[in-house]
Length: 237
Figure (spheres, rainbow, N blue to C red):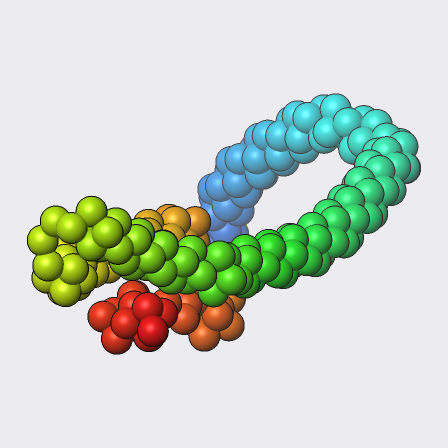
């Protein structure tokens, strides 16, 4: 019985030793795997450290540049403020110049308006002078010429009567020839047309339009009646 118990005990001890051996073998494999993982982790950490050092080296220059830029920012701001002040001064000068130009333009416009009104007065005066010349000079001259013509023909008829040649009534009737009146009427019409042409040439249509029709009534010139037979007969009588 004791022999069987010892055999069982040996068998159990052997199984326990085998289990322990397997455990150690598993631990060895696990340690090897963990070592490989630790090696990879170490390499990864070393790589990260190298990269961090590279980044630090790169950032060092950037940080220095940022420091330089930060140091230059106040001077740049002062320069920008100075430039803005100069721009404000230029804008103020331009504003003053614009206001001065506007004042000058307004003054020139007022002067031009005064000149136009003065020219209007001159034109009206010239038109009035033309009308006065036609009324006071041209018409009396034409009438006087008609009287002198009739008087001359009457004297001629009287001389012919004294000389005893021809019928004085026929000569007097001949003095009433229409050609005399047509001649003076045509001469008068020509003079009248010349005066109207002078007025028409002297006045520009645009000037009349600019005066808003103020000169439309002033441009009407009283026509002078040409000599007629009745008026000449009245002078003869």
